[in-house]
Amino acid sequence: MNQSSLQGLTHTAFLALSLVLALISSSEAGEPDVKPLTLMRSAEVHTEDLPVMKDRKAIRVLTSFSRTNFYIEQGQLSGFEFGLLKEYEKYLNKERSRKELPVVFEFIPLPQSLLLPALKAGYGDIAAAGLTVTEARMEEAAFTKSYLSGISEIVIGHAEAPPIHTLDELSGRDVMVRPSSSYFESLLTLNESLKHKGLPLVRILEADETLATEDILEIVNCGVVPYTVADSHIAEHWLPALSELRSYPQAALRRDGRIAWMVRRNNPKLLADLNAFIDKHKKGTKIGNILFKRHFSPTSDLKNPVMPEDNAKREKFVSLFKKFGLQYGIDWKLVAAQAYQESGFDHGQRSPAGAIGIMQIMPSLAEDPRVGIADITSVEGNIHAGVKYLALIRDLYFDEENLSNSERIRFALGAYNAGPTSIRRARDQTEKLGFDPDRWFRNTEYGVLHSISEEPVRYVSNINKYYLIYSLAEAMNTRKQMMKQKLEASAEGAPRP
Image (tube, rainbow, N blue to C red; front, top):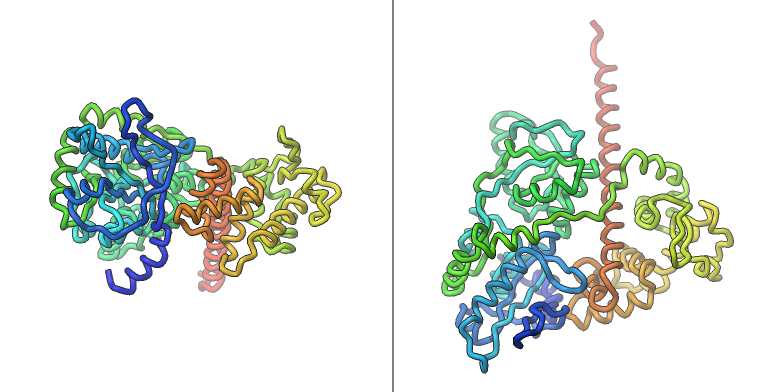
């Protein structure tokens, strides 16, 4: 990595590492093995091997959030990677004396694109995020023995997308993956093959790095993107929960893949110790099988906002979403996404707390002179009040010059759900945790989890995904219309027989 890249990494990603979330194991017998999220020591650069890590009494794990490998549930960390590494923590401490402090593991969540640079720069000791062993990654770091093997990267398609029997049938098709994923590498390799055959290339849609494989599967399940790629073990356990997906194992971009942890090349003792542990704990061993079955259980709370019946409901309100979105400077598709999250476009909905209608607005808020919408029982009044209140929160509480427009609206959405005062306190907590209080995703989310609950995190995350789905659907429809017009124009200009 060049010097400028490292400096950029240091000044952005590692602003979040001055004081990060950690999970400290209990050192007392009988106490719960998992404690609530807490603070860890200031982030420092360390590249020493295992003996020094033991002396420091800390090993830092770089990971990425996903709903199978590493996630937060009721304020506590969980997931397959987390569970396996907690077993390694026990393994590492098994011979310590009672008077000796244990080695504790500190889990540092980052976007997957930053895991390898962070590891090499010395901001973590192990990278663990369901990482496939690839030649490109092996040039940068050392891999442990695999704890999952026989993994295929298989094509996953929507039920209405044409079936894929061979990889050549992906020619000219849209496939969404993260640029940092091994799937992206595999698609580039496939495109080289297609190019040599004179076939159209796969159109690779680059997913945001904040989206896990499971998130992309949900988006494909909604039908706005026809295909993605997933590891076979993830696909096997998520497809039962996502009824509109179809898997095509015969069209595998990579077969017999191995998933392992990464360490720095100058840490051979850590590598050897991890390998000895994996021999006894990988899938196929008793503890490996227990952890695999426990954490590879699919759940999805994301509804499909582009189902025909929901599309029909949305179309009734699009003119109002556009009208008030334009009036208050908010993309109408985001207004629609929030309305869908709030009520599923059901204006008759009433919450136990008294929130009313499609935007689930409280009468007291609508009556506030700064909102001043008298009738929120009408659809137009309700949408007007909801959008005006969201804009009010954005402009009144999140008007700092250092906040981008997208961040302002994300904070406003969180405040719409949890209250402006709660989100401001969460931003203060975020700064204390060492994260960036001016960014929502993977930053203020931690402060919200720590000081409020998981609900605002899910709320903003779902709206963001619905907004992405609506935006993708609009872009796809626009492209189809342009292609149709181009074909019609070509047909009109063709010589008649």
